[in-house]
Amino acid sequence: MLRKLVENLKVFALLIPLIPMMSQTSLSAQNQQKEATSDLNAQKEEVYEWLKTFPSYKSMSKPEIFALKKLSLYRQNLRELPQSIALLKNLEVLDVSHNKLEELPQSLKELKKLHILNVASNRLEHFPKVILELTNIDTLCINDNEITALPEDINRLDNLEAIYMGTCNLKVLPESISKIKYLGTLYMPNNELVALPKSFTLLKKLEDVNLMSNKLEALPETIGELKKLKKFNLVRNKLVRVPKSIGDLTELVYLDFGENKLESIPETIGNLKKIIKLSLSQNRLTQLPETIGDMTACEDLIVNMNELTSVPASVGKLTKLVELSFGDNKLTKVPEGLGNLKNLQALFLANNQLTELPKDFTKLNNLVILLLNNNKLTSLPKGLRELPKLKHLIVIGNPIKSNTNLKKFKSI
Image: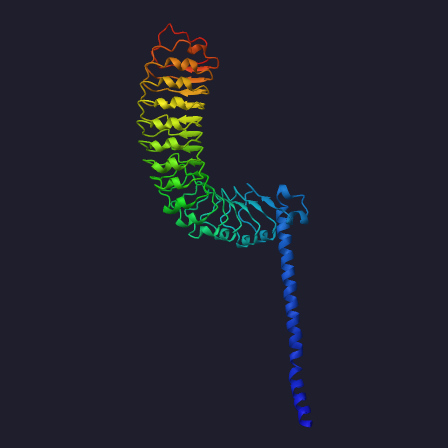
């Protein structure tokens, strides 16, 4: 009994020095918690005071600022964003475009509700890795920076629906971009792309693609697999041919192949029944397929500045045409059927080798503008000057006979 009492006293003696240590540890944890709270409060004060320096947020209270869903700091001469911006937990839209940002704070990844991020027109030289942490983003605008490449793991943004990356000196797209399954808008004009990845046509949700002013030499042969594509802009590239599968893009309403090196267009173009505007200007086309007349929804057909010597008669079936341009070609005649184009308002036939016009031009009752300058016309169809809406007729540069009455027109 005595021995047990002694042993307990020894244990108690050993515990006595530990009691203040335990209290000290508890106090240390409390102090750390106080410091963390103090730091958080300081950060909140920082972002609050920072935002109040901008006119749009000058009069806002703390609760209002921390409840913000949309923050726009467009053109504010910013060189950096504070780490404390991450405390604006409710942000869904952040626009910091047209500033002088060279990087984005790592704390940005805390903005879990962010859906739209606009960092266009800054000084970013690399794709900010922190953006890959914003997995709820559906719209990313990063135009006009110096970002030459997308990261290989860009597909981490698997909710992305639209990416705007024009004027960034992009030279290549990673194959992984094809794994962004919801991508519907791809806007990448004014870059240095020479080819599209083989997997590009796996982007089945694509509806709007703008790749103008790049250096593309070819399109994937399977381009027709992009069944939902509605707008396709390929102006100012180096394309020499169009794949036959283009005719499978039956949802297209806008297609622009202007300023390329095309020498022919496949007959499958006629399958584009919904096309409203087709531009083939400034290429090397010597003829068009007759099937072009099957695009019966077409309102604007632009084929100026090519090497055409004739116009397919089937163009006369495009009765919804509002604008038709065959200027700057080598046409010696145009088909009679153009008189069927009852909705035509503008017809451009300047700088060709026309010696006469079809008589049925006098049926174009909605025509407002008719450009015929620099051809070889010696006369105009009788009744042309009676067209009720024709206001601008340009015939300068033709050997028109002096007895032709042109007084009605505002410009000749």
